[in-house]
Image: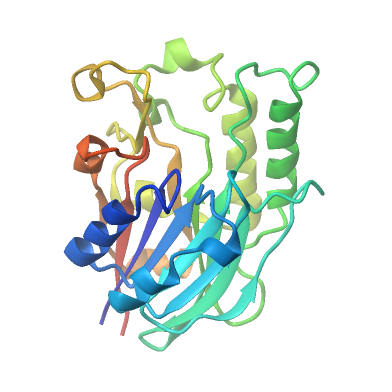
Length: 268
């Protein structure tokens, strides 16, 4: 059977609800993980998703900032929320979904952006980001619970040279500095995760999932970064059938600066 999971930093779920609804109607992933929902739990638009057949919704939100939501056609169980760095931000949500006889634990992450200055001594936002990465090392692909695992979300780091429009020019720019890219790779290796996007799309190929609002013509300049990721436990590599990055979504009316990424699996 086919199973698909999508990740999308929506930059306000209520503001961009029509875009999410259209995306679900057109692409119908089994699970959609949203980040930066910017919505307290009591105002989350559950009814809109129920009308589209997404009856199972797990949320962790706060007013005006951050927030993650996992929306599913299939039942969600064992919902958990981990707080990172002791600051009370809503940046993580996990839940278990069953597909093709497999139990999949889906981690939905929104890693701090880190501000503008890549120096933890003078920039507390960057210090927070590095601390968050340190604590992410505890999230393992194999937690010994019999589940396969998927980790998706806006990790706010473009790790490879081909994940940015210019490796040389962005080496000192937050999201592509060596301390971040190397730190994210340590998280991935310690956790036993496979970068499923790069498992499917060769590392030599440039791919982006984010284009700044500051660009006058984002499509022509194409100064993007791959900030959105889909990782999985290694046993899912053989089940992965497709990865789609919806570049066209950046040109939709009142878009997010991120676009949806979809991973599809053949699960029997």
